[in-house]
Amino acid sequence: MFSVKSLFEEILDHDESFRLFCSIAAGGESQGGWENGRIAALVPAGLRDLAPKVARHGADEDKHGRIFNALLKQRGLQPVAVPYETDYTLLLERHGIGLAHDRLNREEPLTERDVIVYLAHSRVTEQRASEQMRLLVRHFAEHPSLGRAVKMISRDEDNHLAYCHEELLRFARAGHGRTIQSVLHECARAEIRVYRDVSLAVMSHMGRLLGWPRPKAAVLAAGIHAAYAYERLAGWRRMVSLAPPARRDALGGPAAAEAEFA
Image (cartoon, helix red, strand yellow):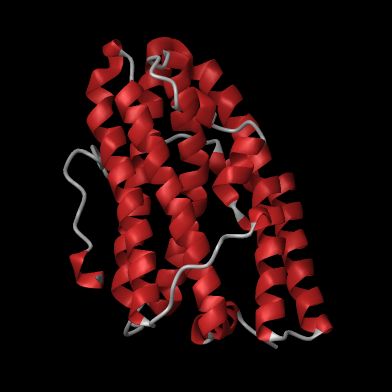
């Protein structure tokens, strides 16, 4: 029987599966960097104090994309085109979650509700990102090539999640609590479906690259469906709760450099 660690080791030890893994991760992070950069530029005048934090969020995401590309470069590999069905950020947008790209491409300032939608969407997706990176840290913190990268990215994702909690609570105190909960619930319901579909697609691609036998692929698919069933029943609740974070003003400074991974 295989474990989560052995599954990741198999993916990371094979050049083509590692190439796909890093390409998917780099593409999603870079997309998040662009989105946050546009939002920072369009924050309405009354909320301009939030703009530097949004920009820091975007800078962190850009940095993560560069880190994953640097990990590919270390192995002498080039990024591969990300299959549509594995593109988590694109599929979330196609499901109407977050701010649409045609909205962000306009030069029209965002509304206060737009900012709340952005923060609620980020609170849900950063929960997922924080959990995924903590899983990688648990198993690969001492890995010679991945260790520093996953620890740095995990710290950043925890900071992003703390920032979302803090800012949403500030908006809730200003009287937007009902709107926040409505958007959080909508985002969480969509995110768990997209995450299930993307997980199945990624495992399908990895299975073909690694030559997994049908029973192994079936077990993995069953595990993904079981995780979705749990999230649909109760697990989604962790994505919609709000609590004062232990890390205050988590995005109040500049993004840390990633030069060590170049």
